[in-house]
Structure formats: C-alpha cells, structure tokens
Length: 386
Image 1 (tube, one colour):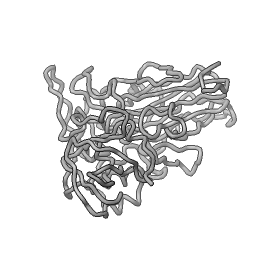
Image 2 (tube, one colour; image 1 turned 120 degrees about the vertical axis):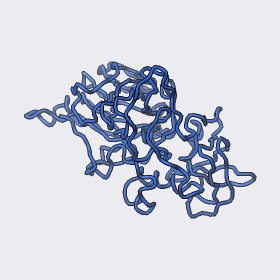
Image 3 (cartoon, helix red, strand yellow; image 1 turned 90 degrees about the vertical axis):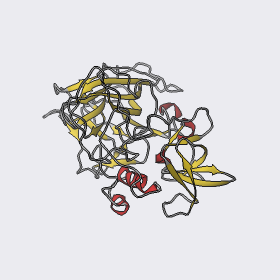
Image 4 (cartoon, one colour; image 1 turned 180 degrees about the vertical axis):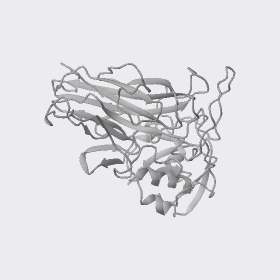
C-alpha cells in the first residue's frame, strides 16, 4: 500500500494555497502553514486591497504551488527524517503485510531538501530542490506529489519536472553513479484525483527516465477526468546500493489549449506559479469544450509576458501592474516608491524567510515582495542580506 499524507499531517495538504487569497486574513494565514502565509503576503503586498482578482485556472498558467521546490521545508507526522518543501507532499510504499520492517526493499526513504549553497549541482535553479533517498536500501514507489484543483473536466493537461538521479555503490569525488542500483524516475497524473496506488488504471505516466548525474526534464500529457487531479513524481530502483538519491526541481502543471499543444512548460526552466501569485482562486472552471480552432486563453496575469532577466547578474522583473518599494522587508514598513510591470531591478540580497528581495532603488537600498517578481537564476540564489 502507499502512504499518502493528508490534512491531518501538519496542515500540509497538497494545493493548500488555492482560495486563500481574499479568503483568509493575514493573521489567520500566519497560524496555518508557510504556503498559506505566502499567499496572504502576496495579496497584502499589492497597492490595493483587491488588486488581484483571483479566477479559474486557464491555459498559460503554471498551476503548481512552489514550482521551484524552495524552502522552508515542512516536517510530516513529527518525523525529522521526512521533510519536503512547502506545498509538496511525500509518499512511499509501506512493507506488505507480514514483511519484516527491516526489509531493505521496503525501507521508508528519507526526505531532505537540498540547498544550492551546499550542493549547487543538485539544484536546477534557485535556492533549493526536493530530495529523497535510501542508504543501502530502496523503495519502489517513493516520491512527492501535489493536488491540482478546479480544473475544467476533460481538459488536456501536462505535468513536467526537472529531475536528477544519483545511484551508486561507491563514494567517488565528485559523486558519480557507479555500480548503480538501476534507479529510475517518472512523472504521473492521477486523472481522477486519487489518492490511489500506483497501479490505478486512471494513472497516466511518462516513460521511466534515468538521468544519472545530470538534469533532464520529464513530462507527461493527460486528461483531467475530474476537477481535481494529482501530479506525482515517483522513483524506483532494483538494487539496494549505498546511494539511491532522487532530486527534483522546477515543476510545471498546465492546462493545454488543445491536446499536444506546445504550452508553457516544455523546455522551460522555472515558470512562476499562478497559485502563489494569487491569480487563481477557489473558482471552478467551466467544462472543457474541445475545438480544433480553440485559441489559447490568455489569463489576466503577466506570467507569460514577463520573463526572467538574462545574464548572470542577480536581477528580477516586476510581475504585477504596480509593486510597492519599502524601506524594510515588512508589510508595515514605509512605502518609499513603486515599480511598474516589466521593470527590471538589481537584487542585492533576500530576507531571512526568502519572501522579500533587497534591491537597488535609485541611490539607496530598498525592499520588494519577491513573490510578485520573476527572478533570474542568479537572483534566486542570492544570500540573506546583512
């Protein structure tokens, strides 16, 4: 059987941000979970109480929350060895009835996010990634998942992630997959919403991939048979070698304007989240009406029009009509100016919680809310401002 965490585990149900913007006060959100707090901060950071009109999901939006698999992490069921980045939920295969709990073929993996400052090669972009691993053991159905809600029934959808594997019986320097355990990884969509086991006939998966010691994007196209589906990233292995480690980063889930359309996820790196930006609320989408001439819907957002600045210098682009510039990284700090959609600024550092960027504003240092911008990789990796 599979272990599926639910809302009983640390208030960390997948997709927990949907509908929070405009539905919870900042005070209430702060009492819930990190991703609830960020949703409330996004809404409150705008220069108007109702600056974002959250609507139904549409093509052109990344519907994954925390697509960059960034910290802080969340511990599950009080277990210190199971820690995943916010909005993501771990799962694994439990031993079958009567099996020895010490059986190395059914060992519960450790889930521990990775920091770019410690292992830059294990992070595709930004400050971190999700990781799960076994030591001299394996688990054939382990991974992370997220619930995607309010989809138009029968809509074509796509789920992608960037993945890397390290499977080795040796401790080489630098780490390389040698004498491997035949570890593999894939992405799946449970089209009727689950949770199910990994043999569910409505589970549609990509082919197994084996991106040893390199990053590769994995994708699957599916159909939303229900208004809620599960997006899953699953690894497996055949041999309990010393290291069976999976790393994932930069995930993306989208509604396609038509089956097989190019969309926004394929070949992309980090795609900002419409959920985290407060652009999607708890609003059911209308049933999907396929048409050979169906145009791609353009959401009332700028996710697809504002791109991350080029280059290796930390910069970020404003991703909302108007963004307040403040003296300190706080919603109560004095507003000293504003930036417009598409403005690009230099990023000098970030706040301790990662929610704010310190920028150069004229001849002084100032702060902006990071969730309403599109940073480049260098900006996402900046250190905490002193």
